[in-house]
Amino acid sequence: MALLEVSGLHKKFGGLHAVNDVSFGVEKGAIKAVIGPNGAGKTTLFNLITGALAATSGLVSFNGAPIQNRKPHQIAACGIARTFQNIKLFHDMTALENVMVGRHLRSRAGFLASMLNMPWTLKEERQIREKSMELLALFEIAAYADVEATSLAFGQQRAVEFARALALEPALLLLDEPAAGLNMHETAEIGKLITRIRDLGITVLLVEHDMSLVMDISDEIVVLSFGEKIAEGVPADIQNDHDVIKVYLGE
Image 1 (cartoon, rainbow, N blue to C red):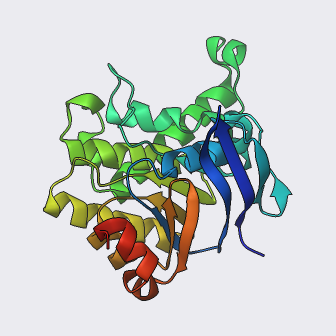
Image 2 (cartoon, rainbow, N blue to C red):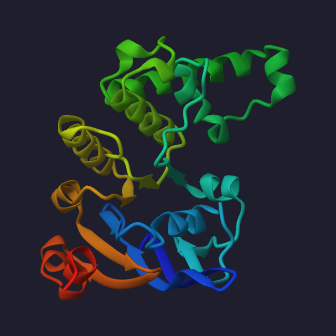
């Protein structure tokens, strides 16, 4: 059984089928990519999986349990984290503080207990800080822990976003165009970071336009066009698939 199963998923906006009968699975420990031209339905698919949009019909299962149409925080609590095409960091907060926010679903202290500075809440706060520093170190940005996150270089901001997502301790990480806005060197570094995440035992599903990155790190690829799946397979098969070539290059 795959870690994530998408079965017959549909999303309609009026008369437009943004996602039309899409099915695929993501095996535990894999890096799987979703590719396709602009408007293919890739981000809509991510929004359906993570609860940002409700499906018109179809099934999304995680660890064997249906999760479609649950609220985003409920899906996150199941063990699914995501990043966004446009980096969404908290302004006026340091890199460390941004990562610490990602631990909120794994912490027990409520507002009142935190206000009262109960001994166990102080201990939990220290543990959250230590774990967050470990994640910054993993992405080689611990030296910037006390720097305002939005003042960092673009690639470093992306690393902070990755660290914050991992602070949730997810089993599955969804990455929406992680190389967007990066130069060739930064893209290569992002590829290494994604592989490192997979090596930690975290399954990765990513949407990406950089085909060199996709072909380099992916175990399998799903191709969407106008909301429909037109191909699925290992990178070598996708590179030689006639329908995929037609979508990207035309006849």
